[in-house]
Each structure stands twice: as C-alpha cells, then as structure tokens.
Length: 483
View (tube, rainbow, N blue to C red):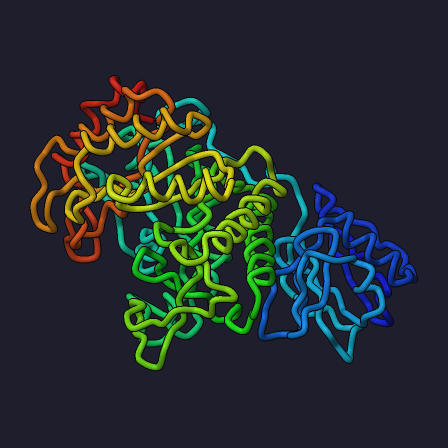
C-alpha cells in the first residue's frame, strides 16, 4: 500500500492505494493545480454521497454544479469545483470525499482500506451457485445479529453448523442481505430505543460488507437489498434518510442516491464481495424517498408525513421524480460493474404490478434487469398460481426482463403453514421461462407474514425437519443439489 499526497486548492489530499501484494512504495509529494487534481478525481471515479447537512459535496458524474443551498448536482461543468478549497478524504471503499477544512494536512479517515481486486478474499472451493442455475435463495440478514449474540445453529441432523452450511445442505444457493443508509440515526434500525436486540448498527455498510464476504466465501450468489432509508422501507413509508433531509431538489436527491449506491457497491467490490444483483429500493410499489418523520414517528415508521413536492419520489404524484431516483441508482450500480443485475422490487404484484410496470417502464422509460415482488399469501398477495399468472402476463408485455420472487414465506396465516406451499411456489416458477427463482424471507422469524423454519431452544436455533425436507424433495426438479 502506498500513500499519494496531492495538493488540492491549498490543502493536502492523501490517497492510499493497494498494490495487490500489500507492498507499497512511497510516492513523492506532488504539487498539482486545482484542475489537475480534478482530473485525478475524475479518472479514479471519485465521488461522494451528498451529505446534505454537511459541507461535503457529492458528484455523480464528470460534471457538477453548485445549488443555492450549497449542494451539488450533476448538471453543469466540473470546472466550478476547481476554484473551491476542498480537502479530499479517503473512504473505506477507496472513494474520495471533498469537505471544507481549515487544516487540510490531516487525513480524516484513519481506517485502512484497499482498492484491490475482488480476488483479495478467498472464496469457497465449492461453487454453489453458477449463472443460469435456478435461484433457491433466502434473506438471512438477521442471522448476523444472532451470531453476534452467540446463538448457535443446528441442522436437521442435530449437528451445529453455520447458517450458510445449513442452507447449502438443503440446496439453497443464494443469499439476500438488506442494508440501511444510517441505521444508528434517529428513528433508525439501530437507534437507541429502536434496536430490536442491540444498538449495534446492523445493516450499515460495515456490517453488510462483513456478512457479504461470508456469502461469497460460501460460494453462494449474493443479492443486495438497498432500502434507501435508515429503517425499514415498505409500501406504507419510504422515509428519507436523516442525512439527506435538507436536500431541496430532486436533482440533488438523485445525486445522493447515485453517490451512496456507488460508494456502497464499490466498497463491496473492493472487499471481494461484489453483489450478483442489487435491488434499487425495497417494496417500492408506491415509490421511494417520499416520507419524513414527525415528532410522533416511532421506530416502525408510523405517523410520518409527506416529503416536499420538490423531492418526493411518490409514484402516484411524481412519477418523473421516482424515475430520476431509480435511474440514478441503476447507473451507479452499472458504473461499478456491468456484470451486476439491477432489480426493481414491489409488493402486491397481482393487484398493482401491471399499473406499476406501465407507469415506471412504459411511461418513464426506466430500464433494469429483473422485476421482483414480495409474495406473502398471509398478507393477501395471492397464491403460487396467481404469481405464476402475473409473471406470464408481464413476460408477454415486457420480455426484456427476468422475473423472480424477492420475498415469500408460504404460510396462509401468521400461525398456519400448509405443507407444500413453498415447494409449489418454486416448482411453478421453475416451469416458467424467464423466471430466475425466489428468496425465502428470514427463515428464523415468525410474524404476520408467516411461520418460521427454525425452532428456538435456549440460545440455539434448530432447523425444523419438515420445513427443510420440503425443499430437499424438490431439488432434483429444480436442477439443484445439496452442497
């Protein structure tokens, strides 16, 4: 690793770059003009999220402009930055941020990082998922929290194993992980008084990278579910993250989406955990980034208010705004790696899916790779037959997309599961061309959406025989095997 120091507008910029073998060379300090420094930033794809409450400017393309509020958008010349005094800082992802500073000689980030290739981390000798395989996936984000509490996991044979080995032993080949912008922020997933088990910032960039590395080491596919909020985002609320709430234009908010997404996905790439697919939003049936908290908002996002019309991404009111936000996220993912598939995720697809596709795809021209939806029978989303019909109908209208179920449980009520529903869901999907597969949501949780596949006993989770046997019995029909 070496440190490259630049003089930018009178301040020092230190750039640490991994050489792959961790052996570096000290580069002599070079004096650069502002315009030369900008070219360095541009050539290294340097950009930073629009922290609207700070002085750090984001930039989502090679051109930026100052807004009246002091924010920066992507619609004018980058030359405007050359006359400003900004101090470039390294983020853990290898990105440069720019912030006003009176003491530019200080390297603000003390944490180490690298710009190494994705081969830096070792991966499983067994490749569990290969492109083209049917996706038998599970969202196991909660298991990182369980592990932190010392909870043990036992397979159906009674042997203690990692959750990854348990899933692989029953044919699962793909993992989905959720992420929040700032889960420790007020009303955030890990805020004081809101954390379900602790105030550790589960779901933030650091945690999702660590768990994504385990997914890759297990040889499994990896889907990243970006909530674009500090807590759960769903059809009832899509709360703008705390650090973006002073943004006053949809252009600036779109830049925040771009820069945050780019930073996150690039950090995963540099950590050897490049996602195979990325969701731009979670259950965005009604749109994205259209809610604000009030003094009575609780940890679950109840009692929110509508965001300003100048930034709201509510589909029914501001479809062009939503399109701008989605396109920014999609572009960020593609700019990191063209190999990543981009995903749109809604719920109530049987009821709202055709309308959503018409508004977003036909009218707004949003282009992506995969159309996904939540499919909870207990929430009134329909049955496997209904979902198959929806996919068939949409494939006829929009053959350019692949389709999948982003979340399902299979239970008809919160306490009642009729054996066979999960198998039926997957066998019906497998029979449809253009359908990729499904993700079972949080197999150790029970709630209004359905029942669990594990049983608690003390500080341990035991895989239920009948639940996992149902998947065992359909592996051959899905073209899958145990690992």
